[in-house]
Image (tube, rainbow, N blue to C red):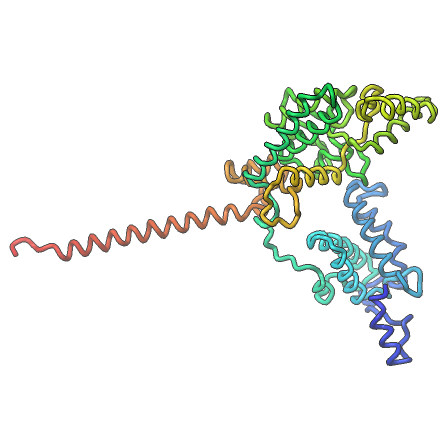
Length: 441
């Protein structure tokens, strides 16, 4: 942490009595357990993660993994170039948190991401305070938080939401791509699978309101439900899909007819040999080749035999890797959330969608979800939108408060126009009454 210690080096040069080893200010032990401050931070991380995950395995898997990752990053940062290998709670002070907040802000991440990553450290410090390791949550002090990107609170209406024009332009493009590919499916089945897969993904995001993480695989989470949507999770007859929701339980979601037809068209060229196949498989040649070899060796083939089959049919033959996988019922990995974003970046650029200077640079998955919310709130209200988006009505009201504000503005305008109009009518009536000659004059 060269930046962290620069000022201390200057202080040492100016004052030989300044000892870097004792650079950290002592913290009051009033609310701390005896000798708790001497505990290395790294020694209690697992206790914190266990408490947060409600058990040694952690029921809240995603949060536990995220918290573990951010605490590892933080500990690596504060121990970098330090004289001791394990920093204790007594050595932790505001300066460390300030430097870490500054470090996060320099990584090129979105402001919300920086605040989110820092919040894990703040939560840990809060837990450490309750456990008696710290006298107070130093991560929440003003001196520390002032280096974080400002959270203006003006989120509603500022985040990306696919507009009707953007949606229609993207849909028209993927329709054209898929229809052209289907026409030549015999000559290029791989191309048809790719075009139909991309189209089905866009249609699902456009019209269902699902989260990308509910239908695409997360590379850091191999639990069932976080490994991509499977055909077994799709009920075309009931117009529904089953997803492992954000609230950590399986849930049914609507599959509107518009998206359903795209699924039907995808299934034809893909022709999955098993219902456990992902709806959105990766088409990466390298990934599929590796998967093919691994699954065949698991079935008793040796590596040379698996390679020979691949060489004969793909390298020297006319099949693509996804076609070879279907022929041998080798289940491919599902497309990841990162892969899904990359597809949307490509499609946005190829379709020439006007982004109106959006900072993302492409139509992002969460923008599709917010676009669904915009339409449903305007058409049916917050309660119905909350049901589709799998959110509370309160959250939906907060996220789409700009819609209600605009509607209230229109009502206020109408109220004043009607009020002033009525007032002018009354004034005219009064003037007319006062100017009318009385009888007998």
